[in-house]
Image (cartoon, protein in one colour):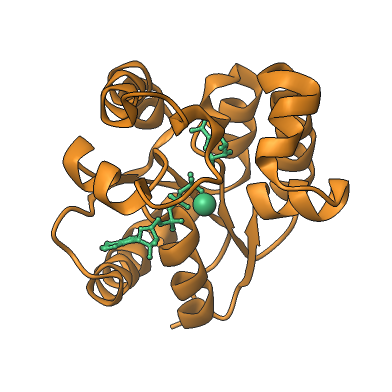
Length: 179
Ligand SMILES: Nc1ncnc2c1ncn2[C@@H]1O[C@H](COP(=O)(O)OP(=O)(O)OP(=O)(O)O)[C@@H](O)[C@H]1O
Ligand SMILES: O=C(O)C1=C[C@@H](O)[C@@H](O)[C@H](O)C1
Ligand SMILES: [Mg+2]
């Protein structure tokens, strides 16, 4: 069955938005986009460089513009940046433009998945696990606010998650579009 519409993935750094999003796009025949990658492609530099040159505010402005453009597309899977939900306009755009999936994971798992990677400026602190815990507390309500579906990703392989998502989306996304 062809599942109609757009799927947008939200969640913290390390939740698996990029990894699961790519697999979900392949499985559904949709085009995959990643707002972080799109910003890097357009600016020609990595995200830490944008934070250094323009600060988080500059990055958020670029993120807003890219998301506003992408949500208007048809039949895509979009992995959003972990902080995309901070902006109320982004939240409204995501809700308007498609079916929103919150990939949720424990702080322990998020830490294990992101510890090796230097490309996340917000985690380049003395205590990245503590930072992840703070971000989790501040953002979990925002992810929940925009989500049509919440999926717990802890102790689940990407393959299993994709399979599970496909099953749920075949039911829920269809009903969502008809509502
Ligand atoms: N369910 C999972 N189980 C184990 N490892 C995972 C799982 N999901 C993702 N990973 C791994 O965790 C790391 C981070 O995943 P990914 O880059 O997809 O997260 P993200 O949500 O896109 O983060 P960001 O917001 O920083 O872009 C990757 O190395 C990925 O392979
Ligand atoms: O959680 C965040 O605020 C971020 C997550 C990443 O996806 C990037 O968008 C950037 O590193 C900021
Ligand atoms: Mg990502």
